[in-house]
Length: 320
Ligand code: ADP
Ligand code: TRP
Image (cartoon, rainbow, N blue to C red; front, top):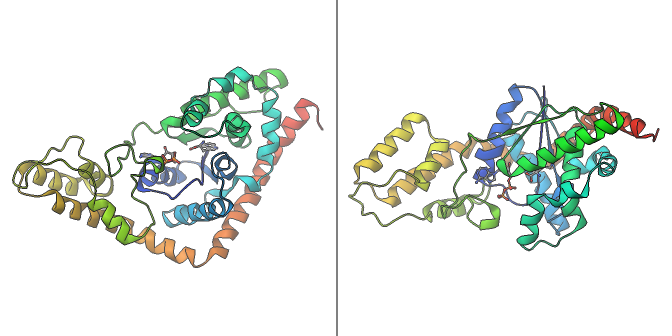
């Protein structure tokens, strides 16, 4: 079974990305053949700083490997280093009705948030379809926000297959409903666009400060603390064992512990949880050449996997 997903290198990774996307993706390595790529072409639709784009790509590779991605198992590469993605995109564009893209929520949302209405933003779902269809993917694990992109991908694949014959496998989305939305320090969904993140591999002092700044209510120290929708407890749960979680929950229900102390416990737990990853991350950063090699190796493997499908598609439309 082929499992494929992409992540945009559009900013510093946060623990919402880790628990919501990276951890499940890494766990999937035992379920099938995994292909994870860094969607740098997609990031170009919103990121205008070349140095940042370059650095973000490397940082994502360091982070995934540090957190347990095994480059011997998973094919990991930069999207822009496998030209077949763009070539297939054109072939798919020729069967994609305008109406399909005009209905895209993400285009409407992004332009409503102030991004310039560029052609790249509009055609974004066609490139994503190419990413997926090129590898005869069975399953695409993504967050809820990507659901419509997967529906568009399936539509495009069906259109192509109807016109030219059965070239593409029709992929299934695997929407991570079970993974709760990780809350940010202000209680909203953690997101780099809301400025409320706990950075995965940022400065440890800043991390601690951010944990200590998590918004809480004014329940006095001695009183029981609400445990429903508690950002502190919800974050603690992600990194703690069930037993540890229950201990903290009972302490909160009983009262007699202040929010400052709860935050300290949360910070200690998160720090411990990420300590081995951080150590590996720092080591990898000292050897950018090695990580670059992993990405080059991944790109070669991806190229070899993509080529037969691209050839079949080219032939089907009458190009070769
Ligand atoms: P951001 O919202 O910070 O811009 P992205 O949209 O780049 O994050 O998300 C990258 C991946 O991380 C996606 O798969 C998304 O579903 C996941 N993700 C991002 N934020 C969260 C969150 N707060 N909780 C759970 N998953 C998240
Ligand atoms: N659009 C996805 C996101 O913003 C990233 C992405 C690009 C992707 N190509 C993909 C995800 C192919 C899954 C499959 O999160």
